[in-house]
Structure formats: structure tokens, C-alpha cells
Length: 161
Image (cartoon, rainbow, N blue to C red; front, side, top):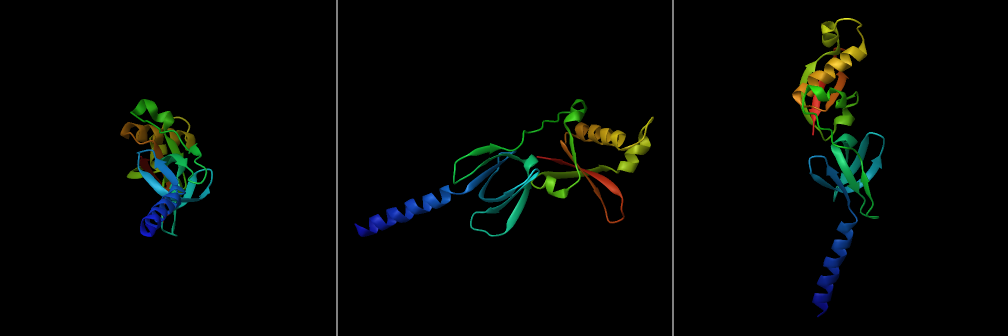
């Protein structure tokens, strides 16, 4: 009888501990369990259950967080559906690699300078950004990371869920 009570206590206690985990649900339906360390404007820092290493995921990649201690659900972002060129205004350009963490990397779609060279009329970042967004939308990608490589060349890489 003591063994049954001990076993019941251990199982029940383990369930209470695991119920305390925070649950991150990604836009693609993948579920990550662990502890939320920090949430800022664009990223979430967390640790997986049973680990101490911190991981970063972009809020764009996350649908919602359910906090284990309180049960509170927080919606972090809406899923962007980019179905073609007409959706170019939905495409988001980011300039920090952390803002793409948890997203699937696509190909480089051109440099800012290359795209500006193809434009007629007024040149500038707004024109280049529009050209990038149109190109990404045609490919079905809702995110573009604009970054600088080791040779100081600006480049654009597309990302999706």
C-alpha cells in the first residue's frame, strides 16, 4: 500500500512540475515546451524543458504562448499569408537576424543596389524595398532579411514559416 501511495505521489508530483512549463506554439503548429526567460518587442528567449541553454525565436514565427504558471494565453503574431505578387504589401522587411529565428531560410533575392539599378524614376530605399517585397511576394515569402555581408554588400534573403 505504501508503494502505491509513493508511486501515485511521484506521478502526480511529476505532472504538476511539467504542467508548470510554458508552451510556445509556432505558426506552423510545432509546439515547444520550456521556460520563457524574456519577451521583447520582436523576440522570445526561452529554455527547453530540462535544459539551461537559452534559445531565441522571432515573434513572427510564433502564434501564441501559454504560460504554465498562470495558464494565461498570449497571441504573439498573426500568420501572414502571401499568395502572390498582389500580396506584396504584407511582406515584412527586417534587418536583425534574430527576427528570423524559427523561420525557414530561402534564397538570396538580390542586393539593394541591384534592385535600385532596375528602378526608373526616383531611386532610394523605398523603391528598392518595394521591389524586394514584390519579388518576395511572387515567390510566396512573407519575410525578407536585409543584411550586410563581410564585404559590406547589402543583400536580401527571404524567409517563410
